[in-house]
Image (cartoon, rainbow, N blue to C red; front, side, top):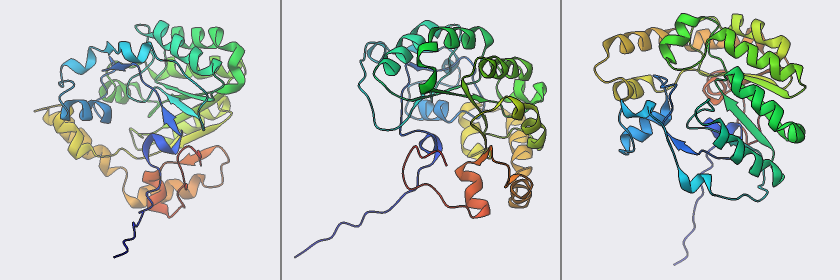
Length: 270
């Protein structure tokens, strides 16, 4: 009897919207973002606890690896960040990937000390790099709650301005949007962005917060309030305001609300 395998097409989501592959070098992250999906998955598979995640551990097998040229852009990192604590190791891995001819999307909630080193030590590979700095709000009270170990808005904006002034390709990720005023964020960062400003909803909070912030009723309350700002009506209004802006791009969480087509394969960045 003949059998036929039916392949179900699943459009890229998450990091696959931005890059064809990704690289990480540690478990855990001192930014300890309350909404972090990587933390949730580490807790689920018993690689970390809600308390231990903010004490990162470098992975020796990833630090020792070599690289060849890959098809499509590589995103680094996706499950941790680039900080003063791991900048030497990050630069080592980034240099190996770039020397092999790869195009990189470097994503961070950035610190100026790190961005200065990245710009200086990777200057030879400038044409192969896009910086994408994660900024979900211009309100430091909001940032410090949801991303307790990460830099302030002013510090992140200074990083964006620094990379822009040195002619690197620059981008901002406003995913997740952490308040109801993404227009203010767009206005603040737009002058220093050459590539794109990505917007996306906060996702899976009802699943994530009980694991990342166990018994934290305030986190649950704030999560519900934040989710309530991102109704379909609010997202549709946001899209109407900015749909003609050439720099604005929409993550899958917004595409699905407003009816935009989704990319056919990973890393198309559209």
